[in-house]
Amino acid sequence: MTTASANHGQVRSGNVDGIRAADQFSDRVTLSQRGRVTLVRLSQPEKRNAIDGKMVEAIRSAFDGLPKETCAVVLHGEGGHFCAGADLGELAKYSGLDVARFSRSVHEVLDRIEYGALPVIAALHGGVIGGGLELAAAAHIRVAERSTYYALPEGMRGIFVGGGGAVRIPRLIGTSRMVDMMLTGRTYGSEQDGLGFSQYVVENGNGVAAAVKLAEQIAKNTAITNFATVQALPRIARADSEAGFLMESLMFTIAASDGEAKTRIHDFLQKRAAKVSHREPGLPMRPFDTGE
Image 1 (tube, rainbow, N blue to C red):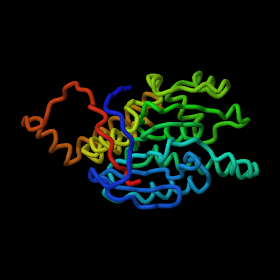
Image 2: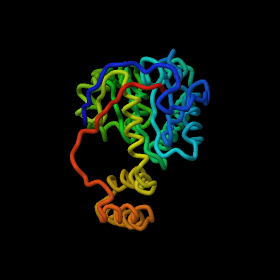
Image 3: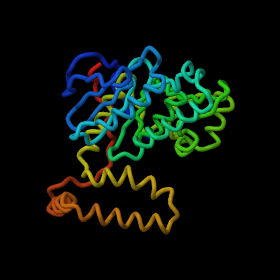
Image 4: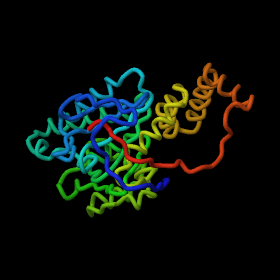
């Protein structure tokens, strides 16, 4: 985890820093564009961006309909919280079969995020609760503002995680810590993100700016490298050693044979490309508008 400091600030309305005006994709999700980075905003702040059936379908449609020029995605929430989890008012009306169908639809959508063709950076702030933490866990990189806190109140509500959290969250923080959160209602704040909740911590109001900066850096990679990293690497990590080594060799061969890779290697050998050196990522910059 990297901690970066900067001036405090809040994201405000307007159209600056190259952000194209937001398009209301639905009454749940809004899209905006900054160059090759697409911002997907959960847009139901009056319900703390709670996840209901319409929200699930809106997220699915947003990721299915990303502009062709998109090379990386930033996922964030409007209002005071990233996402407060499942809409319990809607959930209470469901039959058992409805609950199972809802859970499986969430699995499908979050799989599209985790196993899609593009890197996804989640900008977190406020509550990242229940299904909100499940959603964040599907992203490849998580940037947390200092206001961020994590909770799994399913135990107190008499329910269980249903959006892939039982699989994804232990990979981030370990099974025993997740068990503790669900049994006791224990919460964690951003100051404890060394546990694995996020890779970066930034000042309040700077999460989206930091996430966009990372996304812009990622967009400079070759498309095949980004694709292999988000598609193959998680599967290789869960494979047995023999299969993992073979998949790694195949992906290495494909990536190294790409024309763009050959050009970049040639530039490095000709000293036209910078050498690797250790440096802090320099996150975040001043806040900028997200098209709200």
